[in-house]
Picture (cartoon, rainbow, N blue to C red):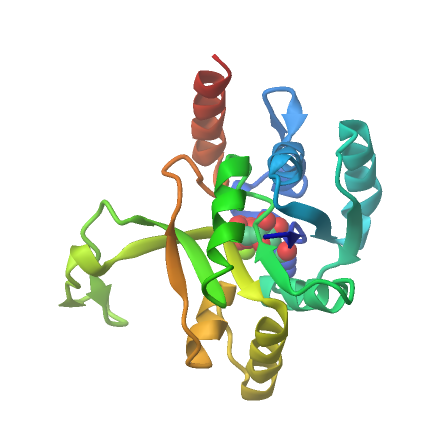
Length: 229
Ligand code: CTP
Ligand code: MG
């Protein structure tokens, strides 16, 4: 089940409040993006990695990737203003032989190679999938004045992660449709859903957090220390 992987890393990390893109921040002696790249490259099913980045970060990212001596080809693609635009640029940059793609956030540096492989294998039997975990909190739907409207049954709620996997031709069509209709979404699975295409949940990992705030960085360090013993 060979897959190409696109890694959106073209954000600015505004919520982290650091002096640079959060994927460049140090986590136990290596930049966040280095952990992400190593996990993706170690997955047996991954044949190619495209890192989507801001032009200004590109030289730094190229140096980081080169220093890792990864066993898979890594190429760099210019990102856009939104994550949606960044992924769209990534899809255009896939080589012609790419038929199946995993999209994985650069900021999710704790996803394991096994999770990449399980998503790639699941793509054999469905055209769209999302790694996800059961929601632990009770979720409230509120109106503009923060008045609670409803409480969805927690049993039916899953927290979406990445990797998210797709048939390349179908995901390209969904992105095109998204541009034409002006849809604004926060993940690729949402575009698939809006196009009435099926998206399957693949059990994710509780430790697969998205490093978003300084607290997330502290938790990631804790998890990684435990993992490395
Ligand atoms: N991303 C991207 N292009 C953008 C915006 C985000 O490739 N224009 C990437 C980020 O680099 C990150 C992933 O999408 O790896 C998930 O986005 P998020 O966690 O929101 O990262 P940032 O947008 O960088 O953070 P913030 O929203 O706090 O500014
Ligand atoms: Mg963002």
